[in-house]
Image 1 (tube, helix red, strand yellow):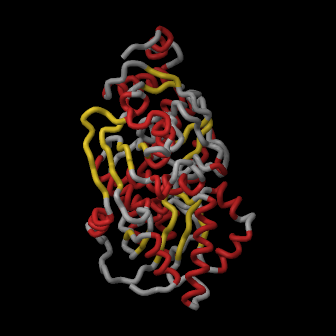
Image 2 (cartoon, helix red, strand yellow; image 1 turned 90 degrees about the vertical axis):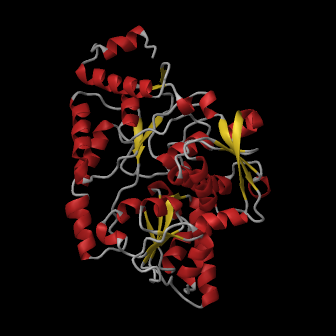
Image 3 (cartoon, helix red, strand yellow; image 1 turned 60 degrees about the horizontal axis):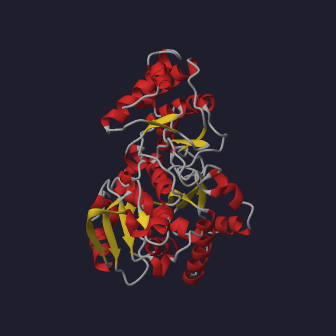
Length: 424
């Protein structure tokens, strides 16, 4: 890898031992993936994935403290993934004991470290930092040093920024150095599609289900998706951005997709069209039968597959403001049709703190509360990490949550029916 004289000097210790180690880490990372040089990070803000104070993460805390003590702090302020615990989310005495005394006992101390390293503000905790209300929305072409798979794939695909799928430590290293190694999704060649996905469904595919099918098929490759115009059109409005948020999260968690292109919709696809398709690209055709096949093959991790759900999570990744409004209206309608006043299954909608504040200014917040649904900033994944929670029959419309936990996937329509009308 080529380094400038100044970069080589830092690697040799001109700015101290800690900065030398930071640069050595980045150089080794780059060399492992064939990077040719280091390129500057140009975004205003960073996004860090490790926002939870798990006691087992002591090596991470120790590393963070070494960086802080050496003054090697982030050159950017950053947002981080959601907090792991919210007192408003249903949990019994033993579950809460494990959360507070065993699993996340060091949460407060770790948040103190994050503030010293460059946390944007006390509410900068979300997996969807790019939402307008959170203030961390990079521009097209900007180079990022981010972690969090669902945020990276959104930034690359919907915003047209450039970022590899980094680990939670590697991204802070890049932010401290102000440079990242140039390979993969930072390069023009690395952003070309090696799969062409042709969607031939008769109705609009469920975002989470379509993303799941594509992710499991293409794995870490870049797909170019055709056939979505009749449902998404050609403009990135709020509805489409929310759809792509959920779609991308599923591609990134059910596979390892860091970038996708949607024909005539996402920035690079609108600009370059089929020039983005690499020579020899493979083809994958998706119709309604294929989506049904994918869904039927999801394993049911509940001890009793016929159990009545004890909890429902919607919002992984975090819900947008428009999604909260739309779901509120849909739940009210479902309850009215069934003659019920409140949801029949304890249900938690999760969203970013900034979105939650804006939503609470609207009439819909009180209306949602009347349905019995809880609005939280929590990370459902971290909730389900509790051994006493993962043994519960929890359902979700999130394919990411289904993949990483014992939660069971249902489509949004199925979720709505179950929480407002009941039945199997």
